[in-house]
Image (cartoon, rainbow, N blue to C red; front, top):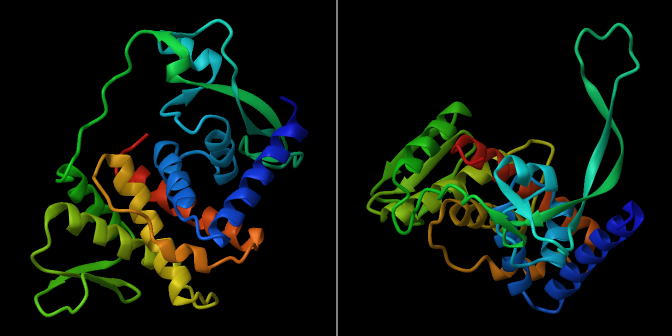
Length: 261
């Protein structure tokens, strides 16, 4: 697939998601977030491409990357086209580092594990209802941002973000406690900038989407993503794209802090 065609497909996927949300089909958004939870290091447009071409994908890599893992792409398999940046060393001769700048994109192809054969992949850590060690890692992540974490017996909601402080209602189950902390951390990272103002619907849904992605990625059972998302866009793909980019980058940062590759 050529680069222009891949870009066209990514834009079509974004438009289709926007139209589905405007029509009240919020399950499409949940499906997209599930893809994001599996491939959090990919840009949101590449996530769109993966979800459009192979929605059941669980682990993708390039042809040579699979070979390094002892697996080989099966004959006749059709690759999943994504966009890879074309990076060049900066022209500034005074630069002391090998810093590079992106000057475009090209189409490359990856393959899902189901399209390969060979050595088994390592089994990921299993989490069902108790996040276990991920809770301590999340606490470290919160602390690293200079955010205070405290508990309350009188809090009327499950959690609250106050710009520099997260308060969690005491007595929540481990899984619910973890989910609420991620939700409130997302608020802290996304919605307390002085120059930015978000509606309650936008901010709550972005925070819930981040919590959904992170919990799915570690294998923690979650509910459905916030259906209020359908109220946000009314077909405005630019607004949707900006929100998806915030959700993706915030989820990726938290998952990196939790030690997920």
